[in-house]
Image (cartoon, rainbow, N blue to C red; front, side, top):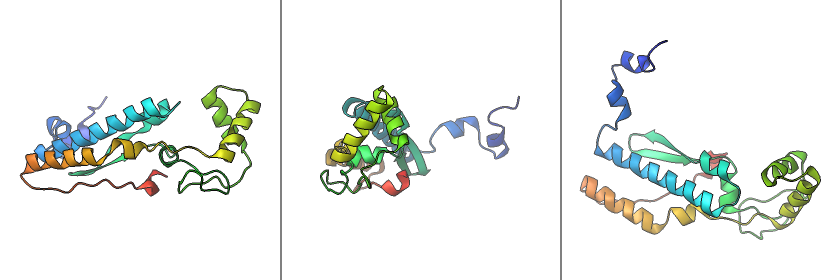
Length: 175
């Protein structure tokens, strides 16, 4: 069997170079990304019911030497922002259920999640569509101004430069 790093070696990249960040800045960004990912997962496990799979779906994804994204399953955005009931804006969300009718797929998913029979799952799903889903504000509770200020302070320590750090929710990419 071929060595797992054959491709890296053919490009002149050693195993140690591939496993370690190139400099202190990249290591810092990696550490921040990993910490934010861990904090989001922890918050989801503690504050959002029945979402073990959702917590596990939260992953760090590098997008460049000094940048990253945190990605998660498509329904993270609905748990984060909530979903309005049909024909209302009762949750203050940008997402709304479109019809009062429950699809078989929704009922099946609810049944698996709640561990109930299909008839009971249809009733739960119907209630969800009538009342909406309460927003959990996962991102707002984890990525606070205090956290962003600490990251900026640490960046200033690492680089000797002053930074303004912000966090942008790009829910379009979660779909």
